[in-house]
Image 1 (spheres, protein in one colour):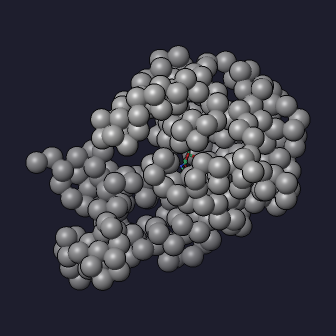
Image 2 (cartoon, protein in one colour):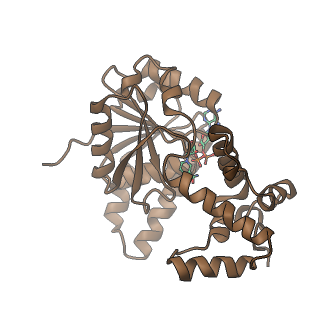
Length: 286
Ligand SMILES: NC(=O)c1ccc[n+]([C@@H]2O[C@H](COP(=O)([O-])OP(=O)(O)OC[C@H]3O[C@@H](n4cnc5c(N)ncnc54)[C@H](O)[C@@H]3O)[C@@H](O)[C@H]2O)c1
């Protein structure tokens, strides 16, 4: 049985918003794609088109499929345009106050049966739900970057999330070809809780002179079959983001094993944020 394709609202048109809009539209969803700035939403739509055109050039998508996908994405500016969306996913910056304000506005606009999800990586879904009038209809949907390629979605059940909400978003993820895995609402969920201490440990190994960055990454690639070594991965994620996630795990759990290594902190202070700034554990300037 094919599930009905609800209209999906996406708030925020940055890295995750774009990826999710593309993946959902490719899966047949009508997407209401919202940003408070017209220029930002236009730029995001352009970025999605460029990505799809690259797929056409590689013959992974037909021209017709590309056009049909783009037609399903409706860029909008007023938040009120989300009124008709049965499912809404916020992809706003990782800032509790900002998410709280926007989620309350979305909650006031959305229909009583609609489900609102957050793509937060580290904030408490239970706490965000407490700001809303229908906490049972609120859930965490943690997609991974790049969304069109990454299959996992962590479905984060807040303390007041209902079974029917969890079932509905599992269906949404599956209909996009993703694998939903239900996890408890706890800091870092599963992936970040396991992954970031590994990156931190690699930084400690570097600090203690166990091996060079290249050698540490080589060991983890060849010894554990990881496609990318932990230090190269940290540079890709952004060392500021790595620092923020570790720091948040450290504060939330109060356990020293999560405390960010100085090899990460000092680089952030120096403005060496990884690939995006040209230097991190590796030098990309050359
Ligand atoms: N980037 C990742 O790899 C990744 C992976 C999984 C989850 N996440 C989570 O997804 C969410 C979004 O992350 P992202 O990387 O897409 O962020 P981003 O910075 O790329 O995008 C944020 C979007 O929010 C908009 N925005 C910024 N300030 C705003 C405001 N005051 N009011 C309304 N809109 C505003 C921006 O215009 C932008 O479109 C975060 O919660 C993040 O933790 C990110």
